[in-house]
Image: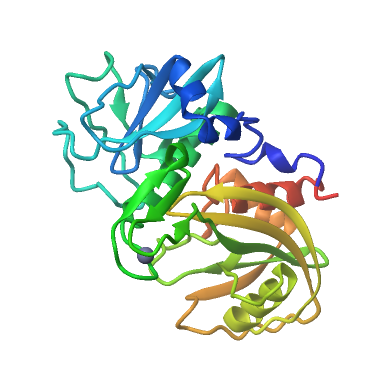
Length: 313
Ligand SMILES: [Zn+2]
């Protein structure tokens, strides 16, 4: 797919500076800038169109710095400042749609912690990549404090890109979990589904976690069959999207259906249906009588829009 990296969180071109992870002396000699995150929410500047990077090792009383990369000769670090006593606590925190913003007197003027899914389409590709990397890395650190082998505490190494066990010596590295998300078509029609618990009218591409021992193609066929009873033949790769909520990599694929009858598994999916191009165009225009447009920024929106515009090849 020609414009595959035009997807949100794609094509940031960040220099991840792997060399600096191995050379702490060189890293310490560079000017530093810090991206603080509070409960996974990055600090966004006053104009709400970019990250608010702070000078040096700001807020150094909180968390452990994680090197994100090198930008304009400076080393950029993420730092988990969830222990900061912020203003603006809200019931929306952790919700699917968190519109709340948190502030603190030590932050730059007008800057606030904002939910990344709300901000992602307003950020430059570079800032989106920094924010996605920071969010994924800090969540990995938050949940890997103990060794999965012997249960002893682990310690951070390699500028944040490794955790080592003091007990048995086992090393852990940041991981990302592959998820297949598929545009399943049959002629002029595309298959969409609605998960239990989603808002009424919200449909999207089918998706599911890959299993050990499975190819991407097999995962696409299995998930579509399990959820809808539709058989998929040829599968091809389209585009991928880092999705750090909390640690997925979405693998966008195109599957050609070889059967049409839908029989849903009600435990996995609330409803599935075929839409033709004309109906999908209505959905995107916001004029469809019962189906809402997919969320901008998510790869499902990107794949559906690309199919509609005949841009898959
Ligand atoms: Zn251990």
